Length: 243
Image (cartoon, rainbow, N blue to C red; front, side):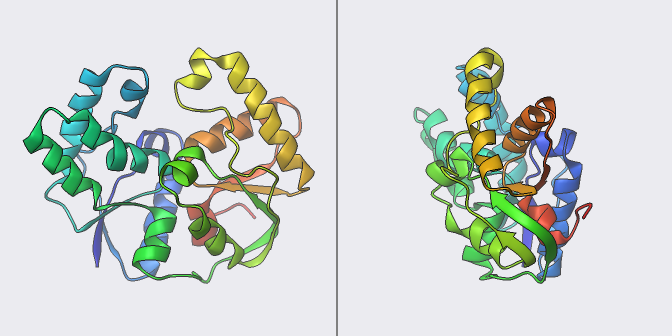
């Protein structure tokens, strides 16, 4: 099986180790990974800010890059997967031919944990991580795409993990992309609520499936003087952590 990797802006610019871990996990399960070098932003920041013409331009480029690639497009981001799968068809509602292209591409897009569980049928990857671990269920992945159990099942199957579910695991961390900039005070308050729930678990490690959420939460915890180890699920599954 061959897949095309959509790595996303945040992973490319701030968390390249997540992209590398994603490739490692896929390859360890017999998947050949291709990286289309023409890929850029999916257009979500522009879309969320109301600049739909700019978002359409980014979406058209995404379709041009990925339309003729492999049967599956895998991304380590529930947020960006949601943008392509659910918002692209809306963006091109008045362009029937482009909408048809968007729908066809959207059907091939899978967030990493969902791809492992639902497509490959992988429940246990042979990874090991020693620690008390809790999981943040990001909004777009859990509520938007309905992917709730795959990350938890994969995480709980990791040897050495003591998994503890936090209260309101699916409660928003306050990131929301441009929301964190435009509504900084509200974003920070939401982040503090999330941090309180994390600390209540007494976990030493936080795991998530979206780089933006991890950036928001770890930044807030670091500023509070009580940082926590935090990893993308791909890093845990690939054994690419500092532990």
